[in-house]
Image 1: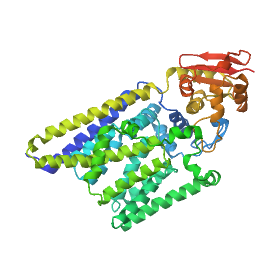
Image 2 (image 1 turned 90 degrees about the vertical axis):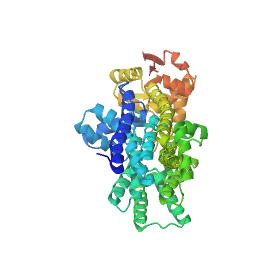
Image 3 (image 1 turned 90 degrees about the horizontal axis):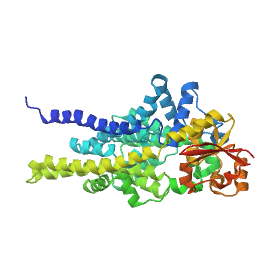
Length: 495
């Protein structure tokens, strides 16, 4: 029996798309089970709060261990999501496998959204493949418990449901609420809809009633959620609340200036080139392209104004370019069908796909190795576990800002600083003094200021501050070396 064209397309979709998803998922599995730990300090923050909800069904509002006492400004939607799964499934699945599945689901959402725009099966599968190996996406989600693995797929669902708003109103409403609660201070969708309206008016395109209602609902919900949850924060911090009270010393690292060459390495050369060509080849008057253009312009605006973390902004650029790459691919296929080499189309497209795969999988592999190798080491866990087993419960540990959540979760002790900046005082200068000064007086003054009993001095801290040792700890009348291994040393303040 001869299969018709639609049946062949359906078969391709049923076979190739799951294969791409499986490839993306297996790629992650290869790395996440190389180590029993997680590769970011943020993961331990999310793990601790999720486990707390699992045990007591209530979130931590006032955390006695963060900064020695800190109000946690978090809606905890992500933590409740994980906690619900944690009630029924083993932890290794919930905190290792589930984030990998969520991150890999970008493949499915990019495919669905791209197919709606291009109506081209092969091009949409190509875009799905590109999205599976975005270097910056691997860096931010591999072996990590991160909201990014959930936010990006939901963001794409929201874009798709707006395009199909007449049939997907309920979907839009539900995921608008989820996205806003996941990241209440994220301005991307707000700016996207605002720019979308401006572009539609500029192109003399009618904004349909359903679109007006959907966008209006999202914008009002965004404002209401922020006013209800963060009213006091805005009153106290003003517009600086958008920067989440990040200390000035760290601001430049998180909200970086836009750098073209660094951006190319994070996105990948092929998605960037094909994505830009997609914007050129597709008519900008098309409402789908206006929406994608709105996302791109909103993201660029937030990056330039430093209202979005640099890597998060670049990640959104990469996702948009993966989608518009499908437009370029569909045009290439259409062009080949019109030429004398049409019979070689399959070979040409296959070569292009293979070349693209090599150009993406290779840098993604390098990034994945770096994430695992630069993540948490067994020796670090050993040092923090020693602190847990050998220090008083009310001890306070001095560590660098990017190890604070690990100290709280693994050691079970209060830190003097972590990345929960919103309601916390700026202690970064004092922490820098602890790890860079050679003066015993300055070091003990800073430690006593926060009632710190121990110093957790890791190799990561050495690299962060460019130091090899803490000179003042040689004074045995004030400091005692109580633990040491290849990755960390623990000093006890005795004076």
